[in-house]
Image (cartoon, rainbow over all chains, first blue to last red; front, side, top):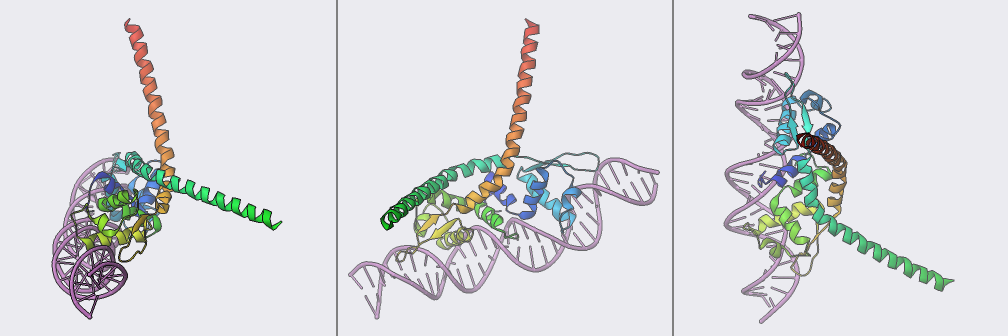
Length: 118
Length: 118
DNA sequence: TGGTTAATTATCTAGATGGTTAAATAAAGC
DNA sequence: GCTTTATTTAACCATCTAGATAATTAACCA
């Protein structure tokens, strides 16, 4: 990554389907590295790297039970991302409202045309 | 990028502070390439590349007025991202609730202790 | 102690990314 | 037509990334 502020790190970590799939799995509860690797066609070391990326981004944390290193989803960076998105949410809601208004006008115009046609 | 599904493309495009700053600028209205480049210390071609990334991700669209190519924010990919985030929102809200409950218990315990101390 | 299981580190490779400068395209204005 | 302004394309470079295989660390089990 080039800009390594926290939000960039979060987004870069999420910009990989394997990593998002790992998070989706972890959203159902803790799992070990092998459990997480199971659904994928890639090597264990590759998974290990993905986990390191997720951990550095704060999206997961890891315990230590005997030889297992159970992973857990951490939601903090997601909340930060949600906060960033919120600013744009206003915009798309505004745009949706304007679209609605426009469609309503179309609807009205059509009804008037229908009235004339009758 | 490696996984080039739409969501990965959106996230990868957003994972760069320069590109997010461009979007922030566009959230205030359309702008030309030179206007967008102005606040940054990087070359025009670099900006041009960033815009191409944003365009491919569907985060901006571009008009064509004489020699200017005005850029406009497109919110669709952000809404998709918001939809993806929504699944995790449930989780962090749950966790927050549980934390609240825990803190409430602590509070109660403390009050009991205070009562005993009196 | 030696073997098995879990996970990480080391080393390497191919391809993407973000930046550069120099050259090309496109339209406007004299 | 020639110059200026806006923007993109070309060619290049350094660094990062996602993957691989082989070797290593760590802990349990008998």
